[in-house]
Length: 449
Ligand SMILES: *Cc1c(COP(=O)(O)O)cnc(C)c1O
Image (tube, rainbow, N blue to C red; front, side):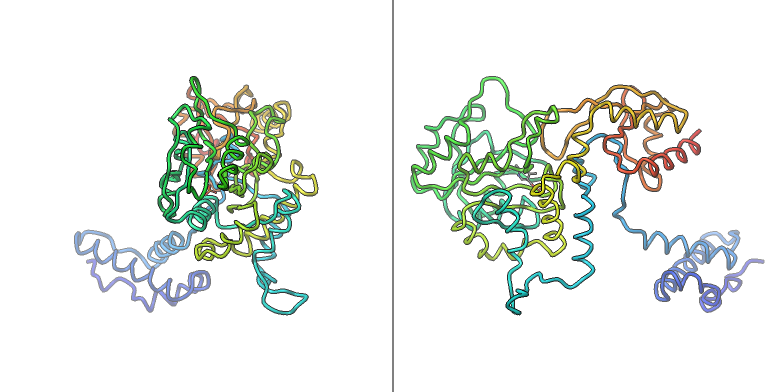
């Protein structure tokens, strides 16, 4: 007859758990063994017919608990979706030099806030600033945690309890809960909306500029207003604002430093254009079209940036040493005119359909399955709405496309793909390692059929 006394004791289990203790440490292993034993007891109490687990079975069950408890939630995935700046997949993968710079900063002490020539305390603000000054010809720059923080900080520092004039057509939601009017309110700025949703004129601005602290322009990033519309260009908004002595802040979002039209895409406004048009401050992301690590860049006039740097929020949203190292390394690619060769998101955008087709065909060859068909890749990351790049994909006919997508997501590493007309489409454009991808795909296909 089964009896709870037949269960091994924790002490007995521990004697056989050296391999678990080695990997997971004693306290966690103890925890897992106790939980597994408790479970077995509870099962037995609710049904005395239950066969009690053996010592080996308890150890195995404890091991799966330990594996589940210690598995990181953040995993590398293979992006075969063809969406280059996939926000849900963490936006831009980084260049080799950027990864190297970040890992060196992470592994070592650095002169983050230490002035080496003087041998005393320095400022972390100088690190990316010099490169941004050189690259963009700006007087000053500040790198913070992300662009949402950049906008919040600029408004808090320059317009708390003051009026900020913005066109109604720009009071948009960018995605992920970033709503321009909400961020403005959070900063304590008084929002002054001018114009209508589709039509904004310079006179609308002129009427509201008296005692305004700032004029703000927010790039509409992820959507378009078409049809009966009118909006003055940035240069004339800047001139109008400056005539009234009011600085202009441009939230550019994606932060393109090179013209996306060269890839056959629409032209995404660049940081240089904003500055040339007269924006006194431009804010943009580090991990969108710029192709670097997550960061928010604030560039422009020194007198304004000085106030921004001194605001208490600047400390709360500051960039860490790895971000500063990574952003600097990515910006250096632009400075050295090697951005397209070195920065993965630019390389992906620059791939000709023919180059993608060659890879898709090599995939088909290697798998002995599927068809290579024309399709479209997109930029994503809240930039260039409605725009796409002609591409070629490997299309797989499987029993259930949705079930196969699920299997791909459960693979190691997970693969993210899309379906169309009940076929699974795999876009080489966004896949970084073809060999690894093919290995995972082959395994998944074999297990599925
Ligand atoms: C993406 C975007 C933001 C937010 O930038 P994060 O770096 O994601 O914080 C803000 N404003 C605009 C216009 C954007 O496109």
